[in-house]
Every structure is written in C-alpha cells, then in structure tokens.
Image 1: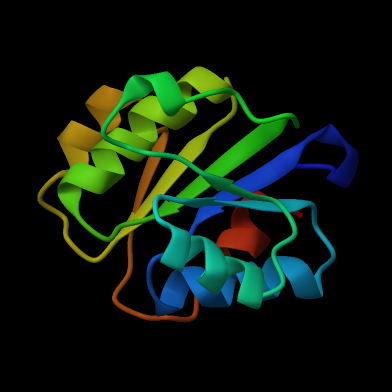
Image 2 (image 1 turned 180 degrees about the vertical axis):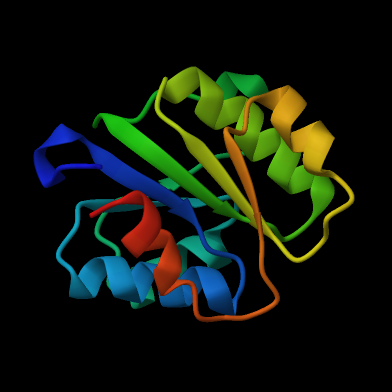
Length: 137
C-alpha cells in the first residue's frame, strides 16, 4: 500500500469517474498531481483544486520532461485509445510504480498491458472509491 511520503499519485481525469477519484484523493489528503494535455484541461483540473498539474503536448516527445516530484502510482482514466496509449508511454518513463488504466471498454486490454499498464480495470460507473480502498490505503 502507498504511503503519503513515498511520492505523488498522478491522475489523468478526462471524465466524471476521474474527477470523482481526484475528489476522493483530496478528501483523504493523499498527495496528488494531475496530467493534462491542453490549457482547458489544465484549467479544469486547477478548478478542482489540484495544485500540481503537469501539462504536456502528447504529440511530441520533446515535451515529456520528468516532473519535479516523484511519481509513485499512476491512474489513467480512459478518454480515447490513442490518448491512453500515449499517456502510458509517457508515464512509464516517469515511474517504475504501477500504472492503472480505468476503462469502460474491454477491447484494448492487451494493448494497454503491452505498453506497460500493470492493471486494466473495467467499470461503467463513476464511483471509483474502490480503487483507493483496494490499491492505496
């Protein structure tokens, strides 16, 4: 289980489930950073109260600089297959910790695993508190 002092939990939250996950991490006072690929998404995450938002241009690897903080775990909520694959590639270079990909589509499981996701979790709901209970505390 993760300790608050061992690094940040990095989250991409392009949907309601991801936003709920961020709120739950904040409620439990866990160290959190978020991943964005546009200024609009950065503003949305900052509006949720996320203090550390890493904004990257997913089209070019020259912008994939390592964050100034240690990343212990990564939770990526799927928006699209292409973006999720790119996020896995980027985050794999930032941490040896586990990467969780949360999706409502069971089809790309092997693609995500092949790129370095440790866990591919299927859910159709927006309540994802079970991720914290099962993987963090």
